[in-house]
Image 1 (spheres, rainbow, N blue to C red):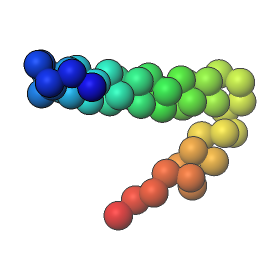
Image 2 (cartoon, rainbow, N blue to C red):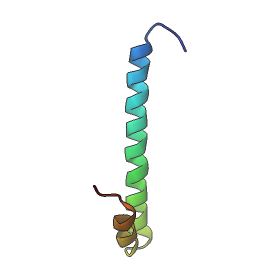
Image 3 (spheres, rainbow, N blue to C red):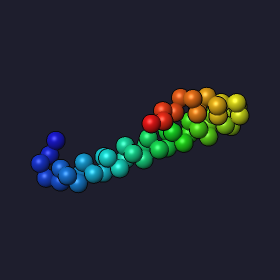
Image 4 (cartoon, helix red, strand yellow):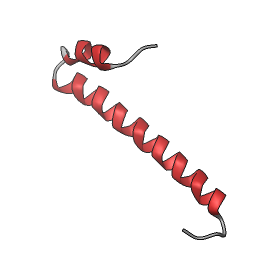
Length: 50
């Protein structure tokens, strides 16, 4: 919203977004393995691979 420090705040937001995504994905993977080991197959299926 502010002109001053626009690029700096954009970089901080990008880093925060990437960090949050990594944490969420990590929680999903570790949470699935903790609650039921069979979920690991489900995680592999839902993960898109190019």
